[in-house]
Image 1 (tube, rainbow, N blue to C red):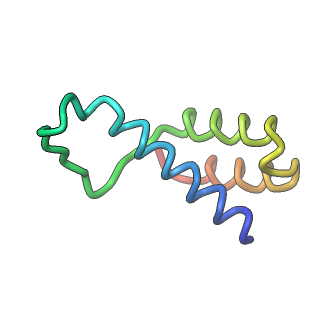
Image 2 (image 1 turned 45 degrees about the vertical axis):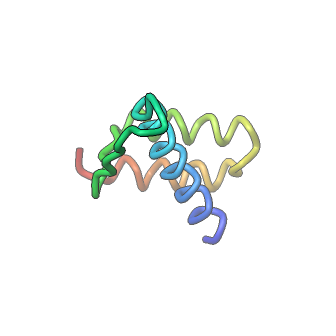
Length: 74
């Protein structure tokens, strides 16, 4: 369970960092962080697949997380 939580946190952090990457154009820029960020199932599944290929999650963890993602509403 800890590795699933760690993976979920890592994925969320990478999305936030990726989203904010283009927001800053100079040291005087203002950055607005939105309260919630919605990602598509496809993007989450792609990230999960890459995590499995990199060895960050086992096949069993991958399948469990994949099923969790697929059960969520769009």
